[in-house]
Image (cartoon, rainbow, N blue to C red; front, side, top):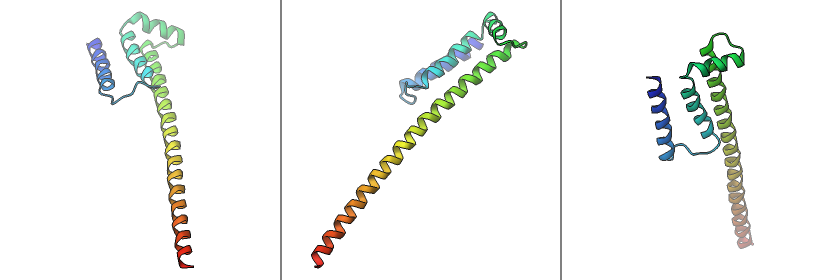
Length: 116
């Protein structure tokens, strides 16, 4: 049953990529890592080995910690992307505002020239 759930999640992720709702960029490898972790965590030997490496006595908790780490990495990657997009948006707004201001100044100077 666990394997069916993980395969369904992996297929759902691939469908989102195929429909271009998720772009293959910096975050996609993290999503793949979650799917691989899900598949690997089905095997008790993997869970026991990871728990031994991390020094955790309750073995399933090691998989939870790795999943939390991967989720934090996804959040950080998305935060960096959103920050870059926001910075670009601010630059575009400044450029548009300066363009409009220059156009207003030109129209005012043309209007003053006509009055004199």
